[in-house]
Length: 362
Figure 1 (cartoon, helix red, strand yellow):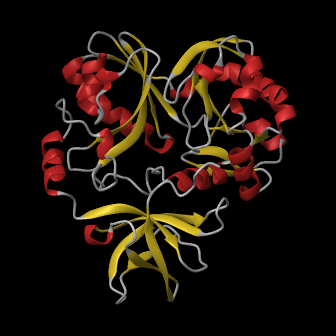
Figure 2 (cartoon, helix red, strand yellow):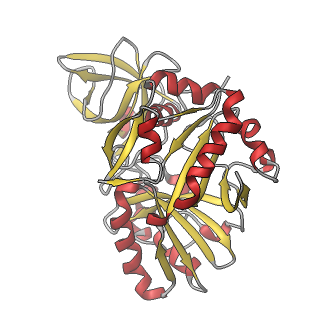
């Protein structure tokens, strides 16, 4: 089990630590609901240093990225980021990721912790054609997600740049918390605004301490992975291994918007045919109409009790107080307003297919 550079810090703060994607990670500090509300209404900090980072450089860097990712990375200018996925050869998804354009011929790919080795092997295999310089720098870098509506105000004293001018999915390489050349990215997995800070392992403790000093008057708190999951689910953000995987296509998962046929990429011909004909199943968002908590793996049934799909993510929404979830259903049941049922133990709980996000900021 690997540790992040901040594991001892989390333990001293009383975090409940759990194994996650091969790392010893904080799942909660004071409880998921309290931490969830901190991020929705104030500012909280996640240590997500388990995430993977690949640096791709050289004259063929963009060509390689265009080949292995579904989105069109040629649209990226320096200082911009892009959500994308790595399609596999059989219609599924190797991983979802964020692509950052650092320099003219240098890109940073940020991948999921549980998929680092798989993603690296996949990209390296295709790189035999392009011979770009690819480096797995995951072990040397840390990542803090400073999230919430008060993040800009709370963190402004730590940098010489105007944080309010960094647009969503844009970033700056600048000074932060006394460290030079830190990536300050206006991205996140919560839907409540804020930043993600990429730095070297030896720098992260100084940054963590200064972040909490600066944020003290704003009620800043450390946040665990349990609240990260409820926050992302309220926004309908996919979690790899639950809502998307090697068997789910981008079109089934509602990720057609990051699948661009302006270029040739892995399995693009088959995916273009699927787009034309439409998938047989789709990922939908649903709200329970009665009390209950949907969970990963529960059956989704129609009014006659016939199985029509499976829940991939579910929880009791801390913001709304209702059971919410994502799941794959036969396409005929995927329209907004469709009535479905979630099989919770021996009872079928009625639910309605709804439009995302579940949570709308006040």
